[in-house]
Length: 419
Length: 106
Image (cartoon, rainbow over all chains, first blue to last red; front, side):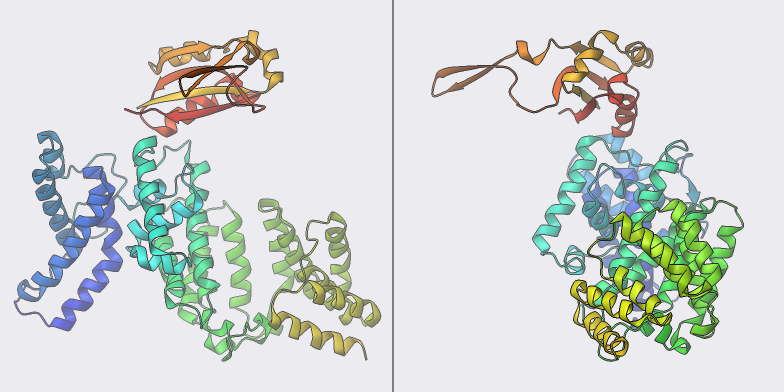
């Protein structure tokens, strides 16, 4: 290690260490101190110290180990000043490599990776969904309270209160800091996946005009999904979720036109899709599917892969997509999945194939008031040349549509069918 | 940590009152979790006491006029919330009534 490392190199090393190591440092400190606030404080101090020391001493070979040690030393200082019991101090000082620690660090620093425990604790079902999301972003991704508040269009004091209450509940209700035992995993893993997917969708639904912090949620969600998939190599759905995110994220920039309006999949400029992300998503999905334990995330990723790998909209393998939606409906028997199945069936086997599926949905009344049901029906009827019926359905959709962009689109179609 | 399990049910739960706990009490005792336990007479036999401005106010029946009433309670010593929730889920009353698991102050 040479002194006087280049300032820019140090800044970028600290920034990258923050992304890669923040969650690990916090997770380890929570395990050893049992104190969430102390863990965050000391992690922050460790990064501040890195900014001071690394320019002078050089960037350490294992930044994560350096930061964990710095944070641990800071915790010992604080605890000494608080005059806590000798037992706790010894515990923190030893940073015991607990034999039950699930996974060793990939850089072989010997520091057990506690992030998996942290994920399961942050996503414990006894916490409200809002609290799970906020805690995950704060402790695992290292977003500040202000950033989380902005991302969820809430005020900073509200978000701060939510975080404090969640941490108090963990403490007071005895929510365990651990990866659940095997018999609880099937119940609890979907909760963790659900929080990460929610994070991703929050970011994905943000448009160009919206706050960049919201869009950043996608990157954080992908990063956390990557960690989860690596820490739970036997969990096919974790890999499925990562693949799904990568495949959606690859199309992010093509989804909006210059005016910020949504561009349908059919009309997107496929050359602007991120091929590296698609390639990785497809590879991760293939690895997951080989395990032979399909689940909703893997199936949705497979559908996304069908779209992402079609060179042109006309090349889309709709028959396969229709089959995948049928499978998905077994895991997620929701009316929206049924509607998507009908659309895919119409694309694959002709509009006439979709009509009975749509009629069944109409009859069930589950999507009453949802404009995409009559809009889909109208589209199928239009393609069959049944224009008067199509025009009727477009009118119905128009009454229910929620945004101006949707209304513009439907009005155009209505004009075409009314000739 | 100690957790209070409030065993609740509506009027129909009274039909189960004589069934006992189907070995649950024994299992929890053997696992060393059970600290204390108690069944309750029906809410119709309750009196609720309030003192306001030094006036004693008495009323018939339970404090909360909800459909779900407390039928019994017990205190468990558990490692964490997960253990307490799993123990509560094994109680027979969980299958016809509901059980509120409340962490107790230390």
